[in-house]
Image (cartoon, rainbow, N blue to C red):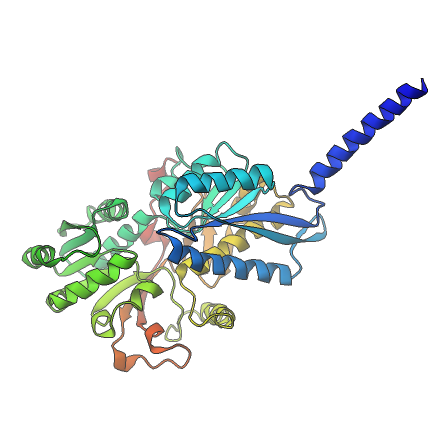
Length: 424
């Protein structure tokens, strides 16, 4: 009898040990920290953007922990970040997700540098219990009812939305009746064109043609000759990465910038600083975020928020942050806000919490989550005009970063498709 009691006592001890180990070895409430997976492309083709995103995520986590962490059940819990490199490959990203969820017991991942990688993580989160916050431009199908994971959100929007916004702005504000698209012959270019066509076909008497560019680095003389012959009022260019600067510089050499207006679909710090001032001065473009709102007088609170963000970031870096850095920062902040609102780290509850309290604001201005998992902004895209060298006089930034003046902006009513178009 005594042996049986001892065996029973041992059994209960083992069970209790397993339960306690599971509780404190996981992300469960009651542990000293909450583990948060951070997955970006820190090597491979997306490394330049991934490194920028990593800096934004680190800044957010430091701010959260310096403020005491996240409060759940009345207890302040620090965030323990687990940083991973997806090597710019979907297969590697899926391995990182598996390791983080099943071995390290995270219930939330912030990440995504390349569109196809974020799409793969979205698909995986349908089967694996994890909250996924994409902080990059994703394919529009990410947000469709048939494709989106119930526990995935995207804070930056879709590639197609660059084309939607550009089409509306060029037709409505620049009053162009004839447009030529000069797009890269790849998945990104085709996504932008899909968005462009969805809007431009609703504009009466606006004609457009599309010329597909070859791989980056090639001589574009014959392609720019096609552009010249098409005689548009506006040339819409939407390259990203290293190919973008080459396209703008070659176009200027072929005197395209003096024959027609050039509108760029996604201006960034890395692109603008790679283009000479005497070229950029002829470029009008849209940018998701710009670090200098000193000449914007319509929203004092936003100007203060941008200045504060930039000042804090430049206290640690030599250059101002870009859009991908800012979105990584707020991707982390919104994920942690969801935990606090939900009083939980369970993926479904995090999504429900943000849907129940969708409005927030920061250095991107007023924003609101939508039921398709996207986030819509009052200042969706800034429209900027490149500055010539003699007008780059900022005291805050070196001349290469004082590269543009904000001339306009547009919001979600221009770039985001209606919910019914996404199946809702």
